[in-house]
Length: 280
Length: 280
Image 1 (tube, rainbow over the protein chains, first blue to last red):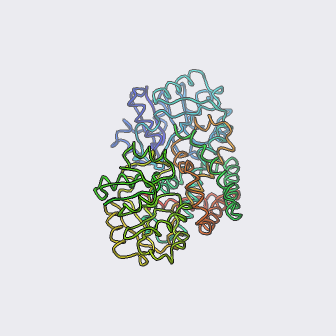
Image 2 (image 1 turned 45 degrees about the horizontal axis):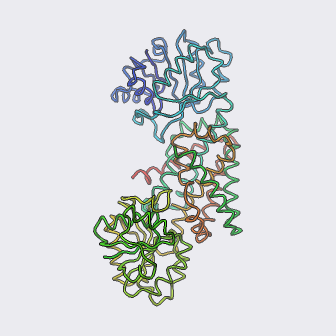
């Protein structure tokens, strides 16, 4: 199988490694608007060759679109314009907007909307790592609009990456990801800003910060080029979650002001139940 | 050196392991109001024997008070009532309140206010681990009120744990910890609650949650018995930080509402600068 990865960054690059190592892909073609990224990807052996987009499409069996989600809205229809029997997937974190752009496309069936639920706070081809996806889950959206053989090929691709599959409609996907992913990023960005603005003495933060702090602000290192378009495309859901998150923080604040430590403790006990979800 | 640890949990137990392994302590005595904890600590070889508090004080060279901070306010004066030439340290996350309780104590000089900046989201003797403190920093507060030989002994104890020392007055300590530690916990508790309340379908969260989500809510597993007294004792500083954190989130919210993605991106870029602090 020849796989073309459009956008050789953290996700595209990590998929390239995994699909090659698993034997799913015999040959990996890289397409990227940055020649520097392509050169790095060749040096790191993430890809076997780099080509222009059209050539990459023509030579591929499977095309993986792994750019920021704003670029996807232009590229996905353009790629579908050119495909014949190839299968096209995107790996974006928002789905409704993107699906809207190709909903009436004559080649819609060749496209399978795919979201592998994994990542790190780093970006670019230098951030690509093996095992990023191992044992995690991939969401496939609106599969009833894709051709059966295309879905089968994507299932095989997920199996090659050792990923479980969850089926969701695009609208539900965007609501869930606002909760389990997008809000975590805003919370981390805000926490980093809060501390940076107050603690002008960076040396002091550096000295005092323990593992707990690093853990909660880790995502604040994430790339704006990737995340701003996600917040833009999933704006309404993110606003809903953000409102609820601010309300929850305001409840903690109000209990502190009233010195109601009993209710404060009850809220913490409830928050503790997250254990059964994240202690896998 | 005989070291008595009062409160054999995550911090007390981890210190017991480290001080014994480094050779600083020849013999470790455990004191805990829970006999079950003491039995576990003996089984895990965190301590050599368990004793009642008074006997533990009498036999020790150094006494480490490692209970939740509310209990410390009762125990610290009681321990100082009984000490002769022993050195007493606490390892609490808030200092002003506790120092107030012993400020005029005739044995104040034997006490050194100590905060090793390390921890995990787990608690109890089963959570104790070696290397928890390795390379991290310990804050010593108001050392000018402690006897010189007591401070020297605590410096040697920190060196045995391979910890750097930072000197702060208690008031500054409490402000800094509100920023670099306490707010991270409230943020995690709130994030966990926000997601749990909305996502009633826990299986779905479990399936979709990736490493980023786990990282930001990790601290939400922390013990309320330890944390509620910290928030109570550091209430005013925590309220200040919480207000600022809510304001920062509200700024993100307002930019989303106005669709001002350029300013949104500028805020993320600023948050990204946390890299130079946490990428050690």
